[in-house]
Length: 327
Image (cartoon, rainbow, N blue to C red):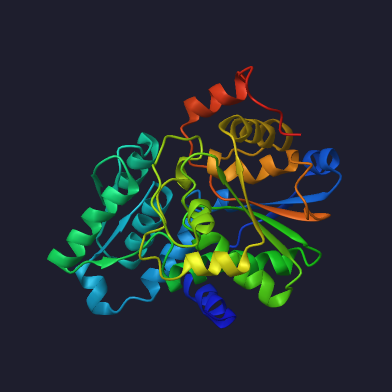
């Protein structure tokens, strides 16, 4: 994939996804001794970065494909993005999800007029239903990450980082299937190869990290996590993101559930921003003093805000004794 694809995607999605703010994080900056800025994908109309990739992929469909409708598998945010973009394009959508998807994300998808189907207890089982619908009904699949148009759409974040923060030397990016980090890394490293791109995921069920360690895509057991949006596999037949992450991403770091909770709390209490576990996870790396190569000008991609607010309030108000500080 070339950088030009990301510029094309920016033009294609400009009427659906917004250019999100990059804001200073004064408390996190002071505590870490770095200039830290937050890329607030939480401000997208659907509350998460996924809208960029979904809009890019839908824009690339033919009229015939749009007429048949679209389908996707999702841990929640991608499905919400596809539902939103499909409504904007006048296309019917079916979103397949596992039983692990939080109820608030399921309700949001249905509110946008898409059909939601709950299938099994893993992203892989939801994907099996997607494959069946593509084969049986001719629906066009909008994959959550492993698709050139989706990657290009997410890569528009990288363009904005370069334009709004030319001093950037490190990007901390949530990592799941790799579409977000692959697009951002392509944009950043094409313009400035010295910029370090670091992926962050949860300790249990981190499919991309397990695949990188094995040297090829592997399946992992999907478990419940505060970073539920990072769950699911990367696909054993992965065509794009595995190799892009392998070649473009400088490091992948896994963090505990306690540190994810602490990051959510820190982001809210110290900087005033609501983020789901996957969205806040990059903040946890500021508490990793041993991490080599964390630069002086750090952008953290806060990827989404779609958290159950009762659970969020409990995390913010009552830290467990086992939870580790974020700074």
